[in-house]
Length: 72
Image 1: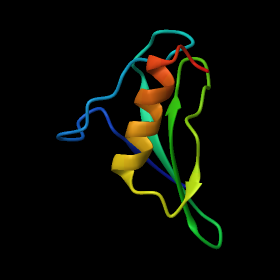
Image 2: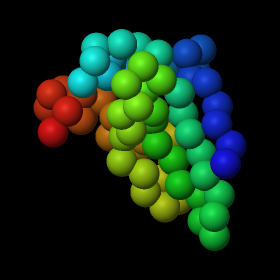
Image 3: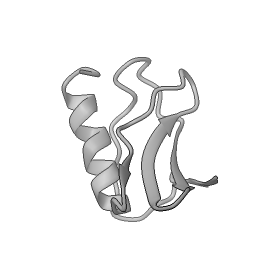
């Protein structure tokens, strides 16, 4: 599994974690047979949805949507 910190990712603003409110987030990339991406909170372990072959931009948008819904 490859993980990349996203604190300095340009043009990609992330909302804080909807569960704990922290901004200690990273972008996690997994390669099994396909590429899977999601955003992960270091503080409480919450994960954004992981989808096959999703772009980083889509992963960030999914995280922000979840954050705006209060973690739902």
